[in-house]
Image: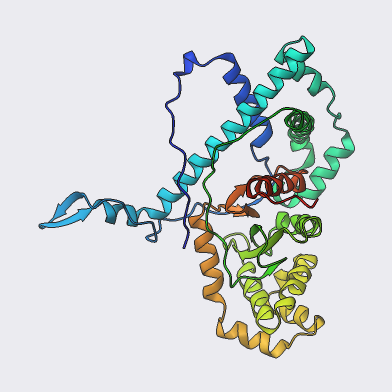
Amino acid sequence: MITPSPSTPLHVSQPRAARPRRWRHAMLVAAVLVVSPPFAACAAPAPSSSSAGSSAQGSDVMAEVGGKPITLAELEAEAGGQLQQLALQRSQLLEQALEGLIASRLLEAEADRRGSTLDAVLADVDAAAKAVSDADVDQFYTQNQARIRQPKEAIAGQIREYLQEEAKREVRTALVSRLRGEQTVNIYFEPMRMDVDDPEAPFKGPADAPVTLVEFFDFQCPPCRQLAPTIERVVAAYPDKVKVVYRHFPLHSIHPQAQEAAEASMCAHEQDPKAFHAMHDALFANQEKLRQGRESLIAQATELGLDAGELASCLDDGRFRETVASDQLEGQQAGVGGTPTIFVNGRNVAMPRGSEFEALASAIDSELTRLGAKASR
């Protein structure tokens, strides 16, 4: 069951023409700091309407058919999943806007300290960004060629522009992070949190850890494979503070073998909880072999010392088909639209390309501070 926390009331904004110049700078900074970059995740089709939603607080009659009423409670139940996603999107937009305004205020204070202007400070910061080389463009194209699907000559200019903006963003992010450490920043906004943990799902770390990181992933998703070492780095950096929970979100339309791979990992988990992690690592390490179908899954199980016959029987029975489907449904209801998607104590965390660990560490440290625990990094 997905249970969002209450969201902060929305204040009426000023008309566009009346918004001060500082607001426009804040939106610019927010765009640079928090908007997810392209090629960063495996995209899923838009979620369909779900009848599993939250109950309404009222029972007002919205219509009658043949004298039988349709109540507000029924409407909210019918559109529950979509309404919940809208509420989550609203909370995320407010949080992004808040981060942008905080960054803007910090940069304005820095401009005052320098006796300069905000535009001049941003220009100086951008000038310090590393220039993108031809080798950088080549490397990015090679790493993302499967998703770009265009000749390098046709896309090189866009890649260079994207990488240059990323370089500027990293420098700006570093400056804002330093300024936040030098000034007092108190945040009272409480973001919407989704109850996406599952006590039956495979996990790493202490069961009673103060911070729970939930990953929705797809075994055929290249960005999921690329993120795996970062997740291990988080586990190593916060051995007593973070529990990592693994939940499945196979993208059937683009990754036809992901469903059975997810089921196979759960079949391995049934034999031995530790075997899930071994299977998880092996499937990502040999991701290209998933196209061979079940044969590759059985081969991986055999190499790991698992009972291959039992795993094959588990797959034949579809023993964990509903488990995987349940993970995916709860992910959709929580706003998951692609993989990997990470929640830290119920908060959906955006991870800019190249700064995934920093984004996760920042979210974890924020939660530890909120809970009064000491960061162990």
